[in-house]
Image (cartoon, rainbow, N blue to C red):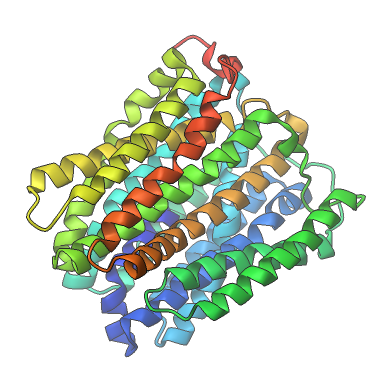
Length: 441
């Protein structure tokens, strides 16, 4: 997870330097970034089937090997087309690497250990985005952007050495539901592609709308297939469980909103305040520092206050801090900006951990693989929709008021967090109690 997220966040920061080295415009760098996201979304549904066929250890090893080898191809890519092709191969590895890694962990622990395990798994997701912009900027400025991908080689080798500690497993083999895969792959891929196109400043919305219609049509086919096939690629039984639905209903709104903010804040600093990209990147570190700083307190909060209170508090806190970003201007004290970003990051971290944990509170071992794959697919789409939501909110608000477009966009996104807040209020008071009842160690 650390390897994948470091790669993605560092590449975003180094985009202009990569574009210059390859002889293309900066906006063209959206293509290899989007190609990776679309590939991951399309291949995630295969994860559960591959694990059933060859086991978790072999699948994880294969995914890490593919991701690492593709990273080398990215590093030596001489043209944009070669970089795009390598990123697509990298996306195949990424689609299996992180979800299967999480599945291996969840399969091997007791239910009362889920909170601590998910909290541990969340650390790489908080550290990598903190280091990514800094590492990417430094490598692109002082060495070469190609080192962003070469960093994955030692990380991949370490991961492959650790694979030997994973107990081998082989489950019942099921046939590949080809129709279920292509329909779900087209739906998730087109939905992510639409989000990526919307997120590109000044892009033509027509292709995005076309992708959106294709996603809906393929999605209808996929759902019908998954509900009626004798051996579907992905079972949807987990959606019948209340805690799982919560994590991917209000939880998806939460993820979309906070990822929209991560997209908008750099634009505000560079386009709205006139800062340099380096200045904006340094300030953005505060957002991820807040993520990381509050992490040690997240597990005790869940055990002491319960999921309902923590989810409600994180949704309200994130909504308020995002809305307060609308009050910032170019002359705002840097201390105020840093404090506000750090607070927003802290509520983001608490919410992510709570939703990621409660998703598996009531999942039985029999459906864990399918629930994990479905969860990964939904989270991937939410991440892609986050940037698109930020771009769309900015477009709409700039059209309504060119002077205060950014402010209105932050207020609009902050207001959407009322949805997970209301959902949290309607939860039973003791929801997830089977996880929080374990003794604090």
